[in-house]
Amino acid sequence: MRKVIVAFVTLGILIASIWLIIGILQRSRLFDAYDHLQRGMPEQLVRQMFGTPSHVAGPPQYVSWDTDESKQDNTGDCVMVFSYTPRLTLCGEEFLIGFDQKSNAVSKYCLFSP
Image (tube, rainbow, N blue to C red; front, side, top):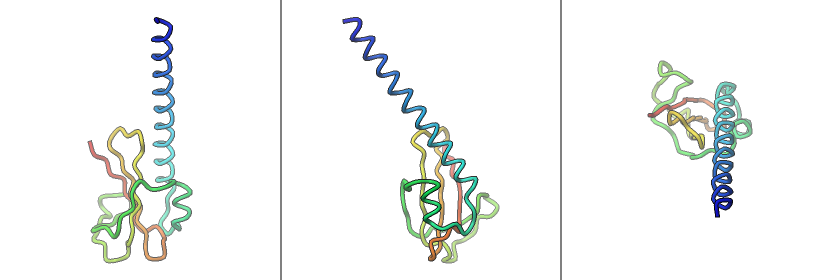
């Protein structure tokens, strides 16, 4: 009986470790992709860099390019936003990438929420 319990505990630790490693790698990949994202990149390239978005939304009220200082009203340039949320998040990170009518990146912002 003791061997069965040890086996289940070991299996649980192994699964948790694999989940943690995958989460850390995904989070790292998203931060790296975010750092390399450039204005005007086509949607297809963004999808290759980031993967499938967690959520897709319509036009946002505001747009910015990586800083609070660049935040401004969306005058219609941004028509769609991809949201990417890592499986493992330390600060509630969410990466938002906005696209124009030609499917080129026009907005990027990283939200942090405790």
